[in-house]
Image (cartoon, rainbow, N blue to C red):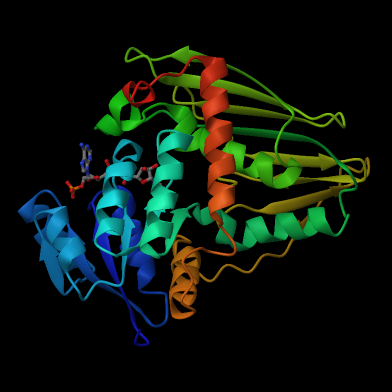
Length: 332
Ligand SMILES: NC(=O)c1ccc[n+]([C@@H]2O[C@H](COP(=O)([O-])OP(=O)(O)OC[C@H]3O[C@@H](n4cnc5c(N)ncnc54)[C@H](OP(=O)(O)O)[C@@H]3O)[C@@H](O)[C@H]2O)c1
């Protein structure tokens, strides 16, 4: 592969725009092609970011030999189909979260990529941002002591026009797979796989979760309490507490714009932990990492591994089972 990593974007919606904008911050990467179901949308997107090639269908994108890697930015309910399409055409894939609707789909996607020997990674972008790394370093170096609890909330009221994907069961709608997934990912990062999971939800009119409350319990006594909502604007903060101190990741805890505050012992006084963010929305960190993996000829990221994705997906499945969040794809 030559030096420049040429990206293709599949699905030109909201997140695709932010990703395309951040690709400009990645050295040796370019947005090469974009595919949208709509010709006009593809043309507008390609002109704006810009992209050399534009397609009004996804098939043509995956058949373009100039594309090194495809970023899948469609709703979760389509990630299985679109990842399979890319992998069957030998394209490396960065697939948005939630990776799939359930763990069975995720396993098939990973197996297909392994068979075809192509790179596949879940776009769990927060794992690549400096504030997440700072949190993990502070947990790892014992600054917080033994982690005893994690308290996270993530909530907003979707503004009109509300994207169909947020409430459509066929597309994996509801808070859990859209925003609660970050709560779950941060709790798994801080405490590992839970020994027991409890969960409840309030259904929206479509049956998906309008609000979801999750409790992780661990055999060592630790607990995580996670809450996601489309009914209220919440602080969207994370608290990670140990027996020596606690961390507070302020508003939009899962992004580079959060502030990491450290509260030692019983003290109310806090220290702001310095975190270096290099600008943009923060999607350039994961995009740069994918480029490095491709240059090294890897088919799996050593940071966001297939095992990480499966553990996350299996945990989400179990939460859905406990809370009664069902999708048509569960029957298949
Ligand atoms: N990492 C993050 O921070 C982040 C933030 C937001 C969303 N996401 C994830 O990114 C994915 C897309 O979210 P989004 O907010 O960008 O959604 P969105 O604005 O609705 O865009 C999704 C795009 O997918 C394409 N699409 C293909 N079939 C579709 C269908 N049946 N219904 C709707 N769209 C369809 C459309 O693009 P074309 O018409 O151009 O083909 C659409 O614009 C989700 O899985 C979400 O969880 C991640």
